[in-house]
Length: 289
Image (cartoon, rainbow, N blue to C red):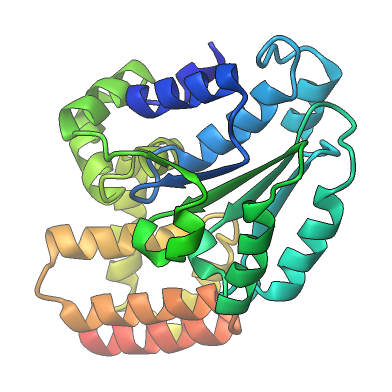
């Protein structure tokens, strides 16, 4: 049942299961479009190979994996848009330590962000990998990985699920049939993003966005920005919903779409949220008048 969580990737899952049986996996590359299950598969693999029962969800190892406190799992992510050599050196130091359970698993996400120096440092370890160690590199683009690293890793492709497959999976997961087409379109064909966004109720979000745009005609930009900030838990997604709404309902509002995209970019760069929202709202108010 563990691998059933990786939806629509039967071929990739079969390849991974075969590798588990053969116990041949010092270096792996999971590649494919964003949001198709690569990260989920990497975490499940880490759980499966450290459990005596292939991922029982009951033992201490599985429970620690679920809580994100497993001593033999390290997830390496980008820092300011790149993964630098110092991070890889720290990983390599710990890679030669004997694991508490079965294998030390290192998930590098997103491996395309490795600097040239970091890639070269990792390559040396992949050439002579530690006995109790598994490296899983996750990337959207296999060509972004150094060719010498690719040659020393087993590559597993994760394909994009067809719209028909996505509809079937979303319907089985309880999504309202009336929302499925919009949800697929809104998520850009990413099943994991569609499953994440289903909890926000597209019909409700559409109503919110309509009220939001109506307010540009009667309220000032600072007040509107304050209203958006009050939805702190959802406003990053709210911007995505707003873009989706404009593209679907008002495709000619290109300047408004650009203003929202610019604000979203500032959020991703950890800019001042209030200032970014106020600037966005000033532009949107101007465009609506």
